[in-house]
Length: 257
Image (cartoon, rainbow, N blue to C red; front, side, top):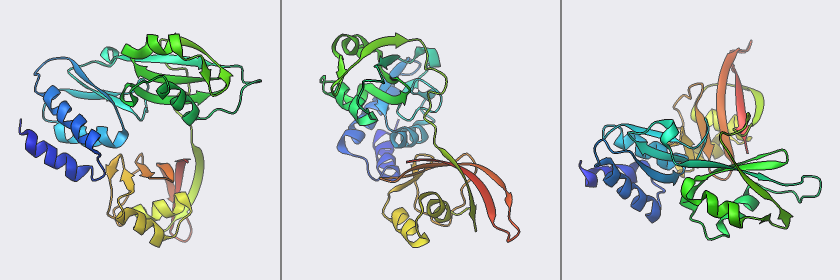
């Protein structure tokens, strides 16, 4: 394995990588050298996983999983089946009638307030009356024993064997009419921006398509693609429904913001 070359490729692919990201990727390269061994990374962001998987795709049997289909934060595994991944699913229950309005940040903050490493925490999904937090199995007992409140709201922790139906967060389904399937046109339509503003976001490195950095405003987006814009949210091009009488594309998108 040419680790220095892989590190250069990772830096080029993930321009906003932090020092922690570079250190984590270096460790991932070391794991890839353990031919045939079942080994796992920590949880990583979608951009990290996409870049790392693309670069290391020829270095062994790789897979990524976050505890449920569509998870954003995922663990990368080598020579591993889905059931091998060291992920626990914890249900955080509370009395919604008497609870404060709790956000994703509140649950994450309470977990990190226990002194936990962010790398051991995956997605947190809020549902009616409870949340599901996906964590590395090594910390599940610690959370169960120590997390008793989220902000001022008492909570109860229980482990579940699988995420409940509908665990993947749902976005807003909208129908849009656009002149083309260009990246800047999709950003403009989904986030209510001018094409010039969309182009500026692309030029600034704040746009990712399928978790990979995107800079080409003119590149067409394929159905199923995920467009992420830092600080604005995420959109999925679900389907091209057809064309209007004025020869514009009619599309269905799912927007998360």
